Each structure stands twice: as C-alpha cells, then as structure tokens.
Amino acid sequence: MNRRLLLVHAHPDDETINNGATMARYVAEGAAVTLLTCTLGEEGEVLVPELAQLEAAQADQLGGYRISELAAAMAALGVTDYRFLGGAGRYRDSGMMDTPANDKPRAFWRADLAEAVAHAVAVVREVRPQVLVTYDEVGGYGHPDHIQAHRVAMAAVEAAADPAYRPDLGEAWEVAKVYWNAMPRSVVQAGIDAMAALGEASPFEGLGDLDEVPFMVSDDVVTTVVDGRAHAARKDAAMRAHPTQIMVDGPFFALSNNLGQEVLGTEYYRLVRGARGPAGPGEQGWEDDLFAGLPG
Image (cartoon, rainbow, N blue to C red; front, side, top):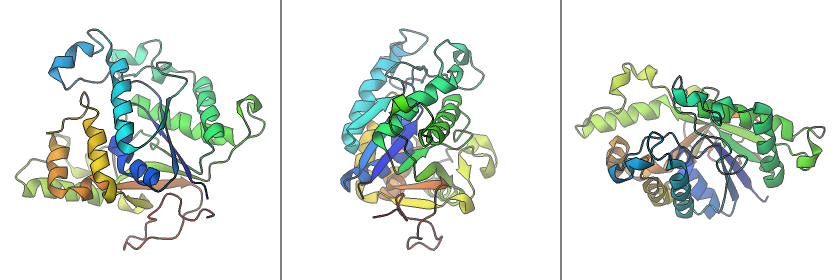
C-alpha cells in the first residue's frame, strides 16, 4: 500500500508538539506525509525578547516569521508537503477564547465554515490519504482555532467522500481512518511524577486537580500509540525550530532531557472513524500503527 497521511493543525508548532515523532517515523518509512495548517499563528506570544516587535500588538509580523519556523521544522522532520488552508494568510490566528482577536475580520474562528471546508476538501481529494489526524471536538484545550480546525477537518472528511459535493474539487475520496490527538491520563501522571523526582514543580500545578488538565483523556478512550523514539532527535530539532513559541529550557524540555526518547518519541491517538486494527504488543491492547488493519 502506498501509505498517505494528512494532518490538520491550527498553527505552526502544533504539528511538532503533537505529532512530530509520528510524522518523522512515517516519512522515514516511505509514507507520504502532508501537513495542512489553518493559520499563521499571528496572535502567538513571542518567547524570544529580541523578536518581541513581531507580536500582533506591535509590528504584527509574527505570522510571516512563523512560516519560516514551520519550514525549518518540516525540514527537521523530513516533511516536504506542507500547506496552509486556502493559502498562507487566508485565515488569521483567532487568539485565545473570548479575546478581542476572536473578532478580527480574518479570524479563523469567524471563518465561513462552508468555504473553509471546501479548501480542505480540495486537499483531501488531491492527497487521497488513508489516514487523517486532527484534534478532538474541544480542540484539546479549548483554543478556538483548534476547535475550528476540528470542525473543518471532520466536515471535509464527510464532504470529500460525497461524489455530489463540489465535483470541481476533484474525484471523491473516502478517508479510511480518522484519529484525534490524545494524551492519556497515565502518561500525564507519569510526567508529573518524573518532574517531582527531579525536584521540579508540575507544569500543571496551577490547574489544581489532575483531572482538570484540559488536554488529558482517560486511558480507555485511547486506541493507538505510535513509537517514534528512533526519531526523537528529529522532533527535538523541529521543536527548536519554533523558538518564538517553544522554550527549550521550559518544563517539557526539563522532562524530555531526562526521559529523552520516551517523552519526545511516543505519541498517542484516539480512533474515531474507521475500523480498529490489530493490537500491538503492549498490555493496553492499543494499535501501534495508524495504518493498522488497512489493506497492505
């Protein structure tokens, strides 16, 4: 099988944090990997002081800069096919929920859903992926662009399979398996325990109870784990390629530097469309391949 994977993300850097090891692994195995990013991430907080003038409140040039960061990250992962929904700059980063950025005219949160879905359908029908990865219905942690990316991706999967929908966008294509990114509760707990063993505070301590960590899901809804530990160095390089958004000396890197490949290279998913493939060797009974069960 000529394996093809499409990932739909909200902003540059989301792809590396959530799926960097997965992307690098499948590229290395010869699969075609396509990234579709919905905005340029214009509203992001700049973590590099000397680049602070790029922020939305100043020169408002962060989006353009993040295109170059994304290019560098994709080079690190080996991904050559990466695109922006409707073209670079068509949709703007909406900022966090209930902020003024939500109301800007090009904010992705305000996008005409039918139009955005059509842009996504064109990509699905061109790429013809067997597998699509995106966020869950709350966008992982409630960011409006993540929620909108979920809506667009899921609607595009349905529309792309319908021969009556916009035949001008290409021949109908049915995506066999759709996954949502997932972070199992047991993994979050293990990370907190590891930080404590290092004498570090939990990166989630301000949230109160563990169950209030917004992107965490119960282990029993996770279906799949991808072992990309052999490509952890590529994910590390890709994360460092997003310096305006990711602090290389922050809690995650304190953890990854000590647990190394396990933290950087293991990524988790929830199958929400398509048939679950055979279980991998782990005791949880999870799949160990996003393409598990698909015709070879």
